[in-house]
Each structure stands twice: as structure tokens, then as C-alpha cells.
Length: 269
Image 1: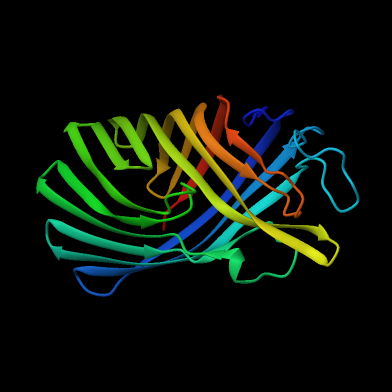
Image 2 (image 1 turned 60 degrees about the horizontal axis):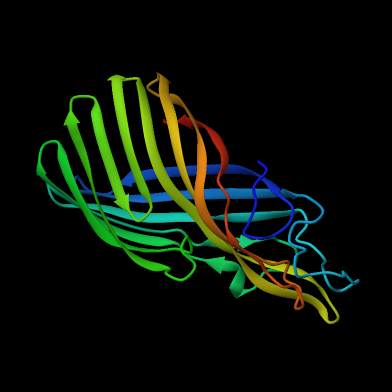
């Protein structure tokens, strides 16, 4: 809520609503295939002046501010996991999908395919090294970056997980059903957005990114149902917003710090 971007006037609230389904299918005793679908929504409610710093006056074909908008990412998950030996796991995944405001018919620029390849090696029972490569649009100027990290159970119930450049968490499990965690992660994507123009619809790319730090709790009510609650702050981030109109001067800059919270329900079967 009440988020600001750079030197832009006004504020916005963002409500995200996500759905994720994954189904692993064993193909041998050492390998599995992963199938799934996902849908991530971002609904932006903006104040009347947001994005208007360099876009006044407005005209019928020129937006004077950014305005309310809903961005959607939706697609499929396809992956492979393969134990090359009992202590070495290779995971490859691609997530082709639509990243758009869905304001008009889609073309090739509305699609993206975030993907990754990750090797996990266990040198000792409670320590896992990770290295790989990922492609996505979280970092606008660096879609291809290496993965490097580890998972370490320091003592029974205390775990540290790092997968740079996207994720870090320290979690404590006082019981097998409940954990408490502190962490930081970065999220974002590039979306295709459209606006009316003299020749129909004009389009451009919009980029969003948030760096979030949180405190959270996960509780498994049964072996098949869990609840996760997290609250924290937006530490930083980078926005490059456009309506898609040719004359719109992008609303861009760093995010102010602000409140963040999420609730997630998980079901296993």
C-alpha cells in the first residue's frame, strides 16, 4: 500500500493474487518430469496524479497519468529432475507464458519464457551446494545471470537457504509442523501494455521489480495442508512504467520503502 516511485507525484497500492500448480511424474528411480500451470496477477490502484510528472496536459490520445491497471503472467511449467548420482541433482525448468495487460489481441512480444538450470551437490549430509543459470526479467538489464547458493541445516531445526541473486532465508523449525523465518527475496517481470493511438493500439514494455524483506511463519495443519503468513517491508526496487502510448514519458525510478504482507495456502496430494 501507499507506494511511491522516484520523483513521481502520487502513490499506488498493489494487490497480487497468485496460483501455482505443480505435478511431478516419476519416469525412473533417478528422474522425474515436472508439469504445472501458473497465474500471477498484479492489480494497481493509483492516485489521480501518479505518473503525471512529465505527462501534462493530457489529450484524448495522450495519457496524462499512469492510471489503474492489471498485469497478468500466466503459463505452463515444464521441467526435468535427474539424480546424476545419489549426491548430485540436476533440475531444468522452463515456464513459457503470457506477460501482458491483456488489453488487446496477443502477439509474440506478449510472451516470455523464464527458465533455469540448477545443479545441487551434497558434500555432507546436512549441506547442499547449488550452482546454475537462470533467465527472467526480474533485473531489466540482466535477464541472464548465474545462480549460486547453498542450503545448510546448521543444527537440527535451524536452516539457512541462499540462492543468489534472488533469495535468502533463515528458518527455525521448533517442530516438524511449524517454522519461523526471516528472509529477503527479489521479484518482478516485464509486461507488454497497450494504449489507444491514432492508428488503433500502441504498445510498449513495462518493468516492475521489488526487493522485499520479511518475517514469516509456516504451519502444516496436516501432511496435506499448510498455511504461510509473512509480513515485512519493500526495501528497494526499480519501476519503469508506461501506458503504451507513444507520447507517454515513462514513470520510472527506485521504490520507496513500504509495507508488505502475503498469505499463502498450500495443498499437497
